[in-house]
Image (cartoon, rainbow, N blue to C red; front, side, top):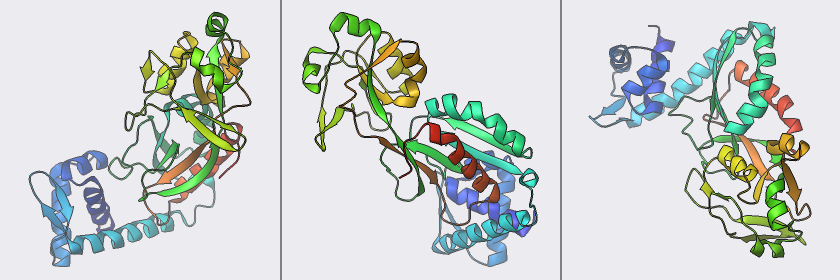
Amino acid sequence: MDRIELCRVFVRVVDCAGFTRAADQLNLPRSTVSEAVRTLEQRLGTRLLHRTTRQVTPTQDGLLFHARCQQLIADMDEAEQLFRQSPQALSGRLKIDVPGRIGRLILAPALPAFLQAHPQIDVELGMTDRSIDLVEDGVDCALRVGPLQDSRLVARGMGQLPLINVASAGYLAAHGVPVHPHDLDAHWSVLYASPGNGRVEPWEWRENGTLHTRQLHGRVTVNSAEAYIACCIAGMGLIQIPAYDVQRELADGTLVEVMPNHRADPMPMHLLFPHRRHPSQRLRVFVEWLQGVLPGVVADRG
């Protein structure tokens, strides 16, 4: 194993806080990963990691070396791509994570075009609505909707998702059509609990420049966008949902928009990166491609 690869192994061990997870991500035996770190420590003449039965943490020297390794690896990756002028020549694997509905409705249908344009790049596409640890899970970038929660990550604004109020045609036939938020006392909603903290999100609307919130009555609480929409279609109440999510249902009349003049504020969308230094060329071309895919979904970039 050359010195660059030794550094890659060490960085992954620190990022994963353990040898076993790092070995799994690198597809290497755990013994090989342990030996790589020992070799580095012998070369450097210092201890890089504190090892216990429960976790692995970097020493002070290990923290300094980790930062240098990140820069070295990024520079090497960039150098390897330096003379590959053609996008078709870029190679390697990208690990991406996106919300489930965006992945299924937007990214997955468009992804074949990216793979065709970059035949030597492989994409590992995760789809989840929960927060993940980009460093621990070895994710190159993640698309997230809503307020940012992890200040350690690098964030790039990707626009805002307009929200609309909808209900099923059957629900409205049975309960009437609300025209103003004051009418909501007579209505049910499907309650949405955040997958991250379990908090039930309030109903929101902006009126005369002021944002208003209130809790609505609901007999069903869900924690995924798929379940949220499915329960609304089944007639269990009103929901607030990104407009792109229900275009087909609005077009065929399954769902109907209500209170169009009393919408919630758009939800910000960001692309998150785990490191601040030099993204690889293959990641840059993916981000550029993604920016071309999303305009039909978002309002404007923030």
